[in-house]
Amino acid sequence: MHARAFRALSHPRRMRLFRLLAEQPQAGESIHSLIGLSRIPEASFRHHLREMELAGLIKRQRKGPTVRVIVTPQALQAAMETVRLLLRHRSHKATASVRPGPAAFPRTTEHSPRHCRPPAGS
Image (cartoon, rainbow, N blue to C red; front, side):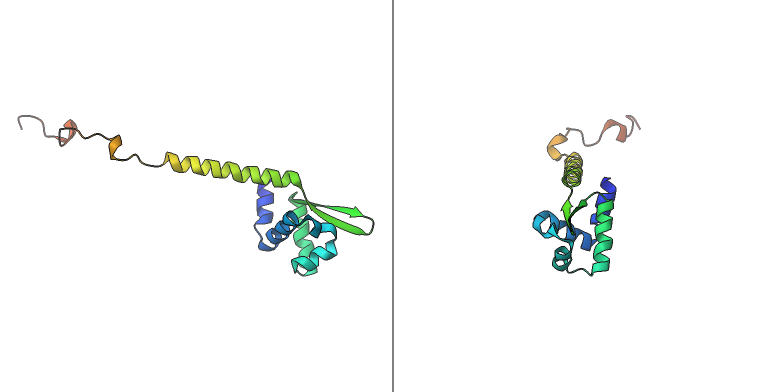
């Protein structure tokens, strides 16, 4: 489900709609008002809404003649947790790949290791 949700949010118009609904839940009180606020042509708007619904990011609720659109909290939480894990993994990977400084490799009194020197008596 996460891949489908991220794929749905990868489109700029769907991301704009999702942010609008997440930041201003009252915007989803009516599809008609949401279309006006989003400034997306109606045919395109309905397509993007359907993609977001299939991804589990939003759901529609009919209340009489009015259709409400709300962000699905579970999808939002799951997406946030995935991002958090990715960032944690990336951060851990970045710190593990840092090379130790010169202090980690003490200097020896010899200039070259034994296996690099010519054999004695040559």
